[in-house]
Amino acid sequence: MTLAVVFALLAAASNALATVLQRRAALTVPLSAGFSLQLMVDLARRPIWLAGIGAVICSACFQALALINGALAIVQPIFVLELPFALMIAGVVLRRRLPRRGWLGIGCIVVGLGTALAAADSSAGAQQAPMSRWVPALMVCAAASILLVGTALRRPAGPTRAACFAAATAIGYALTAALMKSATYAWDVGGPVGFFTSWQTYAFAAAGVSALFLLENALQSGPLAASQPALTMGDALLSITLGVFVYREQIRTGWFLLPELLGAAVTLGGALLLATTPIARSLLAPPGETAPAHAGGGDSGARHDGDDGDDREEYGDRDDWD
Image (cartoon, rainbow, N blue to C red):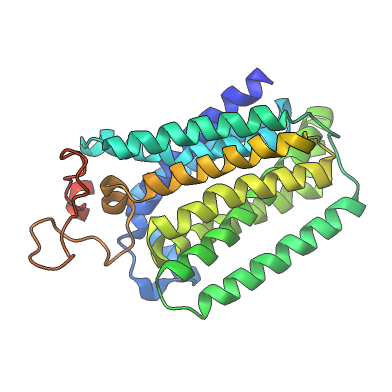
């Protein structure tokens, strides 16, 4: 189980690097290209986006190793740490400090996640699942994704659109992980032949590509504060659900639900704190949301929240990454 946690942490860090790189690439693509294959074509011409894809591949390898060694209900919730990793990486790249509110958010995520995982005490279930479990799981996930994407497409760019795309992305991430767990077991017992003859291999590849496409649209559509909670909690909660339903993994219930829910609430609070820090708004804000700090009047400039100057950071500029 220790190996699973280590590999999951490495996967989260790699995914965080990918998020930073892909986000900067998404800022250079006009909103009119949203939810079309042209979006992916435009992004593929940008070296920074291709570097992000390389980080995604590394993350997938670490994730596969984690899933071989641990339960889905343990591995996927650790990906909640992707946001803290992303902001710390971005801060190092641009030599900007996280304000104290940001470090408080990181602390809440770490404590909340640790509390929830310790209370759940998830145990491994079956290594493979019959089609009688896969079919309803796939149908429900597909239906929910279609509903969320349809809702997003009917909304203009903004928080609702971003949250819907992010929730659909979370479903794709959780489903990808569940399918990947089965495919990696096929490799473990059958080698390359078993891996490439398993339907789960092609299913997780399709789910992963779809999730990546939805993520790019979520990042373009609205503020991080709207999309990140759906990504953070949606992936974790659905992964636990799939682990229990598909693989028959066990989590503790009864009075243990209280610390589990408390831990989840603290984690979500930490994610919201991080998503609303100046560095998150400046580095990961959607197109049109960023504004230079010297902008005059109203709320167009960088805001100050009174954290003894810690939050006095300018909104980001694309030139910082050029």
